Length: 446
Picture 1 (cartoon, helix red, strand yellow):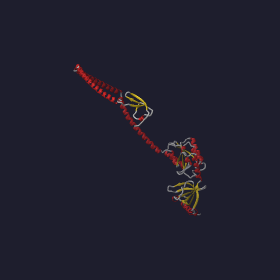
Picture 2 (tube, helix red, strand yellow):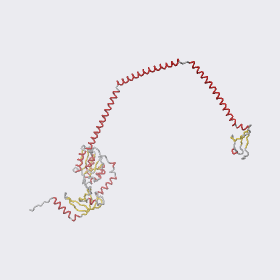
Picture 3 (spheres, rainbow, N blue to C red):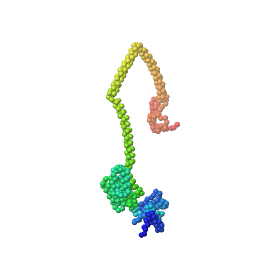
Picture 4 (cartoon, rainbow, N blue to C red):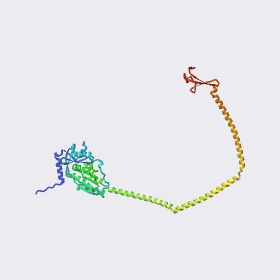
């Protein structure tokens, strides 16, 4: 009997690696395909799948080669690549090690995605005015996702950790493949009709553009747009974008992030509650101290306003006024008595006849002085009047006429020049004994 020879997994893997990597047909491979499930490592490496209609192969392009690319690689790109088969021993998997790459158009799914995105944007599906606010403290959260995937576990664990007060309702949903779009849209409609949840998380874990395509279907987009319940989309990884992300009320980069956006952090709430309680306690303490001080002041005021104290105070005031009145009365009486005595003493010394004689003498003296002043003033005024009359007589035009002079006027105005009168005009000449009216016949200038 032939002895069976068993190989180790390592030995088999090494053999396959040798066979595949030493095959000349596999060491220089030129492929055309569509990029899917692209991941860009922080160090510059690209990990992706290269696929066509019927098959796909994992591929890797290291940073030393990606730095040579003259375009930005993205999901759905059609590319032409040159590389070789590589076997990764620890997992026993093979992949395409890409050395060179150039664009070869855009994938059909990506074109369909961009076309539908543009149409929906033009219809206003993505406008901010349609976005609903996410409740800050939800009582119940609905989750539309697969009941068996890692996404639901991450969501539930995150919700329980962050906000255990809320209730979670799972709507088991197909999130990939045939029937996924109907399952997703039907459950969104169902959650709205039941009205049991405050917010919906719609999502799934990461995958290729084909895996996530159900979330780009128009039925799902319209169900999200028409939902009365706020919806958080939590689909794929951070770099994955679907049309559901744009139409939803809030996009989360991952399912875990979706749960975080749907719930407050209980630890933060506890700190806020503690801080608020301390603030309230401090406020109450301060208010009590202020009230105690006010109470002391009120008690003091009350004691001061006690009726017996008020009566005693009024009585003291009355007694003071009474004493002041008595003292003032006595002082006034004494003052009047002293004034009377002074007046009486003055009266006893007063000789009325002597005063009258003195006043008469003063009056006679004043009268004589007044007469002298009046005569002096009258003489001065008469002299001034005579001087004025002499001046007036000297200036009187009639006095000039008596000396043989005459005055000629025209229209009652004295004429001093021949230019003031015209030929054939009448003029009047005054003499000492009369006047003549003549008409101008001739004018001669001297």
